[in-house]
Image (cartoon, one colour):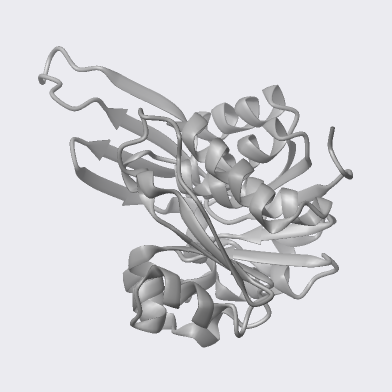
Length: 271
């Protein structure tokens, strides 16, 4: 049974994902096209965990936006996406290990796009928080009425450029090992401890080794049990699912070890 109800708003990038399976030939490829981006990945995981979930971002007026809207509606996620009349919906393309990203309408996310933001917790993507063109909107989300604020790291390059000050006001910070090192210069355990000095909860994800979480002077660790999960950073959306479920469970008042286990399970399912 759930210990309490929780609502979460996820703020950040909305994408159409185009994923080409490894080993595909030019005219015999296995291609998956799906709604994606931090907002969609996290929102779907939060909704699957039973949270009242709202997706906040910016899309174009195109077929990709319609596909995203359909995926959110099918999962029971409230759609608070703004429509951009100038830019198309963002696109994420992965071919083998090569990634191409067109941020599209995401780069025009504005504070006014958050007018319907109302939830117990808010999870803000590090990409939105650390890009100059969307920082104002991300900061507005973090300074709203939510009683629990959370953010992800985006990427090691962005985290290093933004520095730890970019995450001021974040209660729950979720970063991967590379982002943690960029912020602290330390290995995961010590990085989690260091980051927990300025955030209520600091969590460092470790791919198939799960994650380590520091809070209230204690360090907690959980390993992914699903053998299909080889490397979390190669599973598109696994980190987003992890962060969303961790935040939902913490908003419910779930103890840290149990919240961490639930987040790891969500990451494994996403693979």
